[in-house]
Amino acid sequence: MKKLATLALVLALASTMPGQASAAGRQAWDFVAVQLAAEQGNADAQYHLGLMYDEGRGVSQDDAKAAQWFQKAADQGSADAQYNLGIIYSEGRGVSRDYGKAAQWYQKAAALGNADAQYSLGIIYTEGRGVPQDHARAMLWFQKAAKQGHADARAALGLQEQ
Image 1 (cartoon, rainbow, N blue to C red):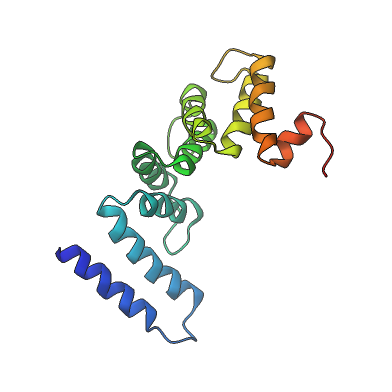
Image 2: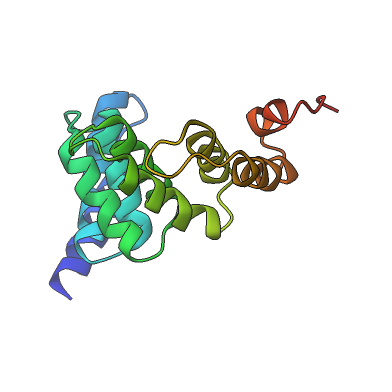
């Protein structure tokens, strides 16, 4: 209860900041509010805190902390966090590069309908990174992403933009 009261206070203070406050100052306030909600177990806040660490918004950029917060949100079923974990493992940012783990996280996000993850699965099946190379499976994932309007998936299938 005390943390919820603190969050309410922080949000109230943030909403009363003068209009001339710097963007960096607003980002710092946003970071505090998001961090409090994330620490309370809110998956959306955990995902957004991961993004803040990933992009260095309101906080120093930190790949390892981004991965930790994405992991917490992904474990609660956030498709966006699962997709971002796929990227992190694929690129080895804040974690050891592991194409197998990247494929697993892309798969989870893709199963929840994340078009970017579906496209990424198409790429990794085409290249055989972390999974056996399988062009038929790659096409399946490109088709799923393309049905959602994913431009790169449409291009991979040779479809024209409409």
